[in-house]
Image (cartoon, rainbow, N blue to C red; front, side, top):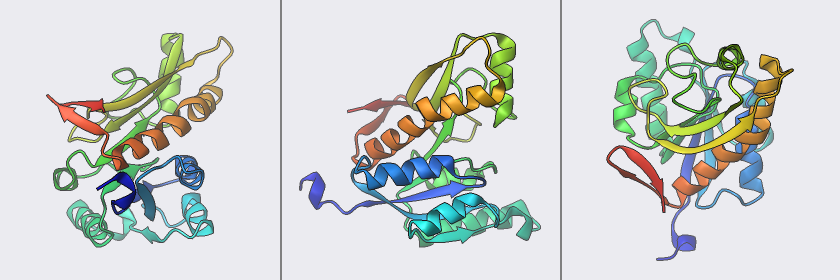
Length: 214
């Protein structure tokens, strides 16, 4: 069976905000840069996330599973778990999804959940490091390069096997906002679709907890 005979993998993208990484994935799929997979559903944790508009404009089905709608975190987890099951998720992409996924979901989808982090892990990562905070800390430290990392999600924040990384130059007059934008443009929007495509082509394999590319 060659690659073209295989059914396309269902890519579920989970979002909470503007959806710029989702847009990068949509563009990559349209350009034929994502091989072996298709974005089949976008799940948002917020009903007013602009990412939902991006999905709808591109004919991608959406779901809203708002954390606020559930009194207990376990019930929220169950709702997400059920949605992923109903959508036949082969790959789950966290694209600016602002809620930490429960262990139950991570165990149900081992090495099938990927996240993009706006720094070169293990720098500036872990609990509390998200959004502009990552870039503020990088500039405070005075690093000369930062970048982005696409990694598998495990039980620990930003600690799963690294799939791809791309460095980005830090300039003397950078603000956190300027650096954030450059890292998105030069790294995140490139390596996230690339990692998704590699996954969908079954080209990523795990050995001793590390990810390698065939």
